[in-house]
Length: 160
Image 1 (cartoon, helix red, strand yellow):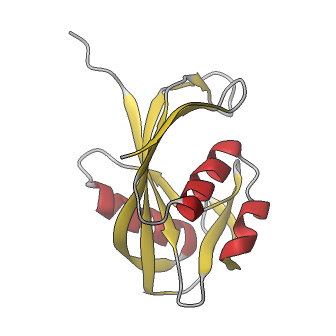
Image 2 (image 1 turned 135 degrees about the horizontal axis):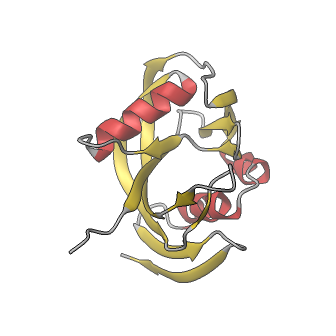
């Protein structure tokens, strides 16, 4: 029996005391909230803390889970050759506890953005959907299954 392969990823909606959200500009994906893949042997929260620090220079405390997402479609990576497997992503609200804004090999810019201006910055429909879920249901956990290729499509959505 072959085990299925999925990418497991985490995203952090980092909120400061002034209702600003930490945003990073990535090389391939434009403006997003920070996050990334969980490495082999790494737990979800450690991965999230590491990814946010790597992409923005900000240290965080993880507060709560707000969304679980499945991208159940496979597609080609930016090189046009490599197959990207299905993904399972979890978004968490985080609080900044230190560090200083700085870019990385993965980011070209990072900044604190007023909460109500963030959606206008995000170009990727899947990231827009995940951010909108954070705004719409702040005290619930949302599950969404979607496809990003050939175009963004929601297959299932519910509170859990």
